Structure formats: C-alpha cells, structure tokens
Amino acid sequence: MSQQVTGPVGHYVDGEWIESGGDPFESVDPATGESLGEFHRGTPAEVERAVRAAEDAFPAWRALSYVDRAEHLWEVFHELRDRHEELGEIVTRECGKEISEGKADVTEAWHMVEWAAGNARHPHGDVVPSEIAEKDAYMRRKPRGVVGCITPWNFPVAIPFWHMAVALVEGNTVVWKPAEQTPWCGQVVAEMLDDTGVPDGVFNMVQGFGDAGNAIVEDDRVDTVLFTGSAEVGHSIADKLGSEPGREVALEMGGKNAIVVTEHADLDVAVHSAVMSAFKTTGQRCVSAERLIVHEDVHGEFKTRFVDLAEDVAVGDPLDESTFMGPVVDESQVEKFHEYNGLAREEGVDVLVDRAELDEGEIPDGSADGYWVGPFVYETEYDPELRCLQEEVFGPHVALIPYSGDIERAVEIHNDVPYGLAGAIVSENYRQLNYYRDHGEVGLAYANLPCIGAEVQLPFGGVKKSGKGAPSAREVIEAVTERTAWTLNNATDIEMAQGLSADI
Ligand code: UN1
Image (cartoon, rainbow, N blue to C red; front, side, top):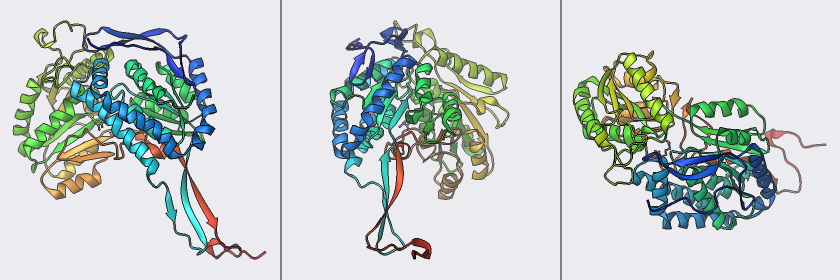
C-alpha cells in the first residue's frame, strides 16, 4: 500500500502536537482488518487543555477581519484540491467506502471550505426597515466563542469541514474530536490547518472515543456543540445540553429514509435512484434509503429490475474503480446488519436477495479479515408494528413495501417512522411531486433523484428524531453565531417606536 500514517501521532492543542497520555488504539483498514497506525485516546484532561487554549485564543481571533480569517481556509481549499487523489485514497482506506466516494468526500470538503471562506466577502445579516425615519436597524451576527465539533467516520473529511470551516470564518475557535474509526483522516486535516499558520489555540484536535466527546459536551466553556452521528449519542447530547441556557447545540443524526415510486414513475430513474440510495457507501450514509415504497401497478417490474441489480452490484476492494460497494466500517456494523436481517426474517418478511454473507470468491484476495457484507433485500406488506421498518440499520438492508391507492397513502407510509432526514419521490406527475414536497416529513426531499448527494450550499438537516438545529453545511452559520438586533438613532432627539411618548 502506498501511503502510511506518518508525522506526529498525537493531539493538536494550542498550536502544538502533544503526546497523549491516553491508551493507544488502532486505525483499522475495514477492507483487510489490518492496522493502519496507532493513535491515542484523548483523556478528559487533554480535552480540558484544548478547551482552555480555544477560550484564550478567541478574543484575538474574533478581532481579525472576516477576510483575514478566511485566508487560512483558502489555503486549506487549495491543499484539498492539490492532494485530491492522495486524500481520497486515505479516506477510502480508513473508512472503506469505494474510491470515487473517497474522492467525493474530499471534494465535498473543499466545496464547504469555498462556501465558508467565500462568505467573508459576502454581505452578512439584514438591514431592517424602521418605523422611525431617522433610525437604522440591522441584524448583526457575532461569533459565539468556543465551538466543539464531534464528527462521524462516514464522511471523515467533508463533515469536519461542514462544522469547522464555517465556525472558524465566523470568528469562533474550535475543539474537534474526529471519529475513533478515522483518526488518520483526523490527523491529516489537523496537519492541514496547522500548515496554514492559524494562530495557536484557534483550532485544536483531540483524538478519542465517547469519553473525549463527552468531556467536550460537559465543559461549559464550550459555547456551541456541533454533532453529526448516531441518534443514540445525539439524543444523549440533547438531553444534556438541550435546555442549558447560553449553550447552543446542533445535531444531525440518522434516518429511516424512503423512496416513493408512484404509478407515474419513470422506472429507469426509479431503479437507478434506489440502487444509489440503498447501496452507495454500503448503506452507511445517514441519508441512505432503507425503505422503497412502490405503487402496486409498477411494483412487479420495479422489483424484478431492482433485485437483478442488487444481485449483481459489485462488492469488493474499495480502491478498485470497478467496485460499487466496499466493506462496512467495523465489526459492530457487521453485527448490527446481521442482527436486523435476522429480525426482519423473524418478523416474517419475504427475503428477495440475501448476499449478507459474501461467498468466499467475492472477497478480495488477502482480505478475509475485512468487514464484508452484501445487499439484503426483502419485501413486506406495510405494518407499523414491524421494527425492521422503523429502526435505522446503517447498512445495505432494504425493504420493498408495495402500496395501493393514491399518493396520500404512499406519503402516510413514508412519514410513519420516528425519523425525518431525507427522502425521495419518483414520479412524472407534478401533483404527486408537489404533494410529496408539501407533506413529506423530511428535511431533504428529492424528486426523480436518489435521496443522497446533497450539496453544501443547501441546508442539510432533518426533522423529528433526525435533528435539532443545523450542524450541517450552510446552516452551521446559525449554530455558531448569535444575532444582535442593532438600532442606531441618526437624529439629535429621541423618537420611540409604537408612538410611545418620549416626553420627560
Ligand atoms: C450523511 O448523510 O451521512 O448528501 C452525510 C449526501 C452527502 C452527505 C451525507 N453530501 O449524501
């Protein structure tokens, strides 16, 4: 393998690489089960040091102009582009997604950096008309202070920049904990920010597990916590911080996302969208589709075509460009996937494709210790009592649910889950599209497309149990700034709103 973990393997705190006192852990290549390098778990004391550094660095950083702060991010932008291939390969090796996705992760990161740094030369806030002629009213944005970022392994370069690029350009300082499955990506991103000469303490990175993340959440000097990851962890952060005055929390979590295929669907688009949504990233996007709700008039043909593709989809070495699905990220994902496949069987579904355990011949040479799974597809009548239709699996586990009747019925099934992140409709009928747009309970609604693949300049986030606030893409700006309504009297006497007398 060409690249290896190099350079300092520690945390980046207050402008220095520090050796960690925490226990060692390995970054594991999910395709081979082999170690890619050794890292150290951040301890609560190391997180505390990082938070202190970030707090101390805040006044001088916020005092710089937007344009000066953004200069550091432009350097990152160029580095991400120049090292696209190399970084894409690191992403693929560490989280297992196939190489075009590894590279797209890096592309998504520079798109976010471009958006955030570009904002430095874009008008901010609003000018608001006043009812008084000689008064000006503005909405101003101010940085909140220290922003804690806790990010997932499935987009190990893009999502950190969703959080951090905006937080930094807006004048906040950052303490970041990368996912424990992707510490190598964490290190590379930290090296990149270090190379820009960002002032000491403005950006800090502590490797580690849940206890390090928890130390960020528990520290009340952290003004905003941005979290993207599992619903379980996100809900526990919401329980801790949701009602704490003065501390902001923005969470983006999972989904039980669905695609509705109506009787007016173009079936080429429907089948293509379903395969992309269910199997890209081996079903491990928070926007991946695990439910396909298909009208009875087209269900037969859709099923035949979808099943054929699910039987054929290429699972294999994620560095090989002909692979469609790489491995899942670790053993716990393998176990969870099998557990839910078993549950679906117990719940009486009709299994259509079972490649859950790959044949030996399908596993790339020398990779028997990798975390390999293949598509698992089943059909079932809609039943709200079935757990397999309600709970997120985060793997290539997908249900075909036929429906009869009108679009209202399809959307009723679509909405009958606790989550509301992403979804799609495939239809050539504009009334059906509009109905879905207006009634689909999701933050990201797609028409005649897969339900994956959002762009950074769009809001990205969910409703119901999928999210709270907006830690993602362009809406991070809401979470990392405070708004001040600023009013300025240009006259020499005082005139009040609402006709209130100013006489003394
Ligand atoms: C995630 O859902 O895990 O929309 C992040 C997408 C990507 C980001 C996905 N831009 O699929």
